[in-house]
Image 1 (spheres, rainbow, N blue to C red):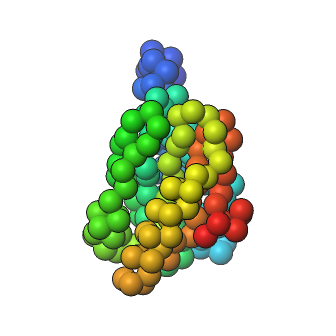
Image 2: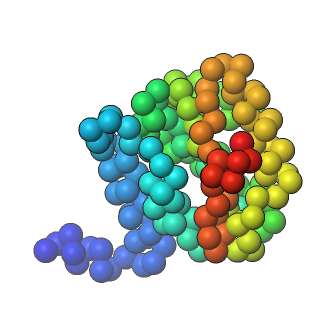
Length: 158
């Protein structure tokens, strides 16, 4: 019962952070029969709903995956303002190599609530994909989080 009491005493931000941590740990260690953890955009959306809730500034996050699409690490790489975040391609490539990732999924939020990928979102995704392909890291998707969550892969924008 002590766990229930400690959870009740958390404020909203602490509770969301705790829920994100628990979900991330489950994603890191869960394997299904196919051995693949992040096999569909819906699995990623569950995590993103928590991670990006109530953010007042733009945040760019990368999910680093192994060759079976199991989660290695989730890293918040860049933090911006209410209407943008500067993403440095070189830093993303360095992080992918540091984590020995075979694939990545990008995620960022639009604090305005409009989840539609912008032209700038599409441009940086293309630049990241081109750079990562040189070191044999696949870009599986890029999610834009607003009032809804848009998968650029589902939209054919990768």
